[in-house]
Length: 159
Image 1 (cartoon, rainbow, N blue to C red):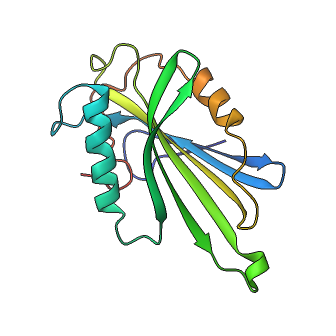
Image 2 (image 1 turned 180 degrees about the vertical axis):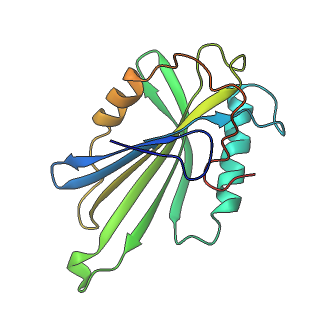
């Protein structure tokens, strides 16, 4: 686990590891309620994903999909995309499948923040994406003890 501040008052927690032959990178940070959208999870998710896609338009990412991620009694808004990284020969091409999952605390919008989880599965392009069981476990174990009131978190270069 690594805690990063990137010059912002709120840290990003980053976890790296392996699941079989798949390298996993997971990070989570707090994000202020977006003033440009209604204070509901669905409208905040729509606005966040729209801003995210606009801010990353020049990235070599493909296959964007807005969806939801279900885990027991909870449904989370999610955005998925992928990037293919060429290897020395095509058999060594690598693919990164990323899911951006938004967690809204039970008191939302009262605490003023929601929490994006970035989950990147890096694997050979010839292999399918790995299981999301570890992502389910990570999100299932996440809880907010107190909101980071007063600290701004732009996150991903978003305004």
